[in-house]
Length: 239
Image (cartoon, rainbow, N blue to C red; front, side, top):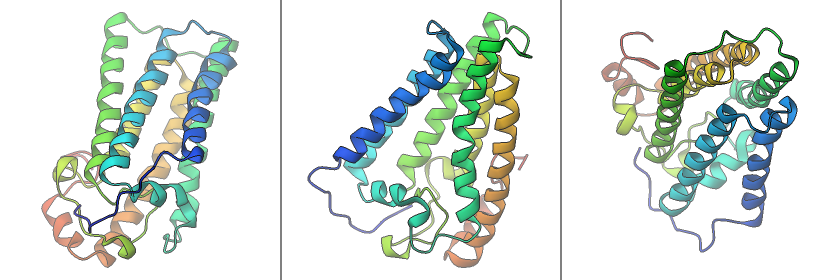
C-alpha cells in the first residue's frame, strides 16, 4: 500500500518497546525449554531464534521506513474504528499463541502423545518451511504500510489498497504464513497439542479473513477491483 508522507520520530525505540522486546525474548525459552525442562532442545531454540531475529529486524526496518505503523500496531483493539468482529477475533488470535508453546513444552515434559519421531530430512524441510513462512510474514509487514494489528479502515493514515509484494499473489499472505508456520513448529517439536491449538487458531484466522475481506470490499476504495484481480485469499488455486 502507498501511504501519505510521515514524519520520522527522533527515537522510535522507546523504553516500553525495549521492555516488550526483552519480555518476548524471555517468554519463548520459558514456555518451551523452561516448561519442558529441556534447555538443550535444538528444535525449540531454532524456532526461538528464527522468530526473534527476523521479527526484530522487521521492527527495525519498519521503525526506519514506516514509523507511524508502530503505534498503530501497539494500540491494538484500542484503535478507533476497529471493526466490531475484530474486537473478539483479534484478541482470540493473540490469546491462542502462548498456549501453543506452553502445550508443546508440557507435552515434552510429560512425554504425552507426541507425534512420531520425525526423520532428519523432514526436520530439515520443516526448518526451511519455518524460515520461509516467517520471511513471508515479514515481507507482508514491510510491504503493507497499513499492516495494523486490527481490522479497521485507517482513514487517519491515508489508507489505500496494497497490491505489491506478496499481495500481488494472495490477498492475506500473513495469515497463511502463520498457519503454515504453526504446522512447521508442530513437526519440529513433535507436538500434537500444539497442532490442535494451532488448528483452532487457524479456524479463527479463517473467520477473520472472511470478515475482513468482506469489510474491505465494502468500505476500502479500490479493494473490490483488487479482489477481482487477485482472486485468492490465502493460497492460489485453493482459497
